[in-house]
Image (cartoon, rainbow, N blue to C red; front, side, top):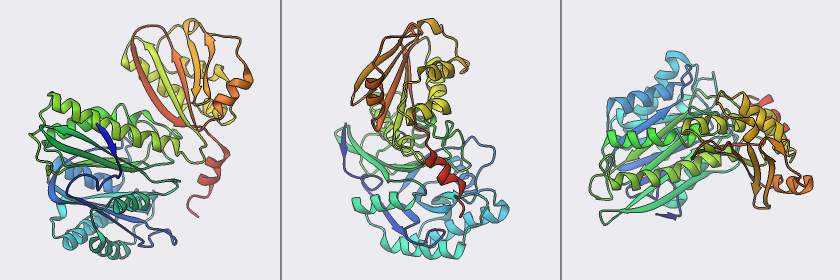
Length: 407
């Protein structure tokens, strides 16, 4: 596997475009298009929030209906959530407008929206935006990057990655883009992610690969504990690489899954590290666990702890907060056996041994915790299983952003 430059346009046959439709923002692009020259098998995973945005309902219907997919239209600024029948009607109108502009069936158009909840979409602006997107779409790497920028809301940077593998003597490419900064919490988080591949792979196999991987990537991140109404991950495969079809459970499937995991984990970590107001990506590794589930539960509990996140923001090795979070996680372990380490590019330091503090240097700990990427490793000494979760520090910037988000 090798990483290559690009995102959603890296795979053969995929094009992208972006435009400024003036949906909410006045000074930036706010609509994006992903388009495949060939029909795609589509897989998807969606928010677990009972309150689901209209585009989530539309995409679920599309994925579950088994329709080949040609395009995804995404807008930022307005989430089209809690908008009733009118909002779902706008999904239909958007898909129909895209279908006309791209000469594809309306059921072949996926949708994504992100932004303010409760506002109706300015549908005429979207329709004009679609016309512009259809005219501008192309397969350049830059178009993919600009599309990734167009779906940002409070994000501070675009998020994209592409990798290549070889299957049956053919080069297979996977590329993805994502957005997410706030309202991010495990169980599909307002995060959107779109992954494209030119692999030959059946729809059911594609769905299994995505569903299996989401549990260890997007569902292991948290910024603020709020599970969004709009979370969507769509994975499209157009088969243009010409490889032998990937069969579930085969060696080729494992290789494809590893590549998909690389893309998903990278995007998930970029989302976590770009949390609203954040200054650091905070990774938590739970090791020495009895089961994978125990490891995931412990890692999630620590990464979701507001007190721990605030300590990371203050570069304070307040390890008691970490053990406290582990203790209320619901996972069983012996607190008198826990070792804790902090690590960053500035070094690694042990903070506790068997549940009590070691004689560590506070200044060294602060230096390690002052880096833009910080890892806490907790070893419960019960087995060989491990898991990682990702979040960010909690700063006053989070309040500043969300106190006046609608204005």
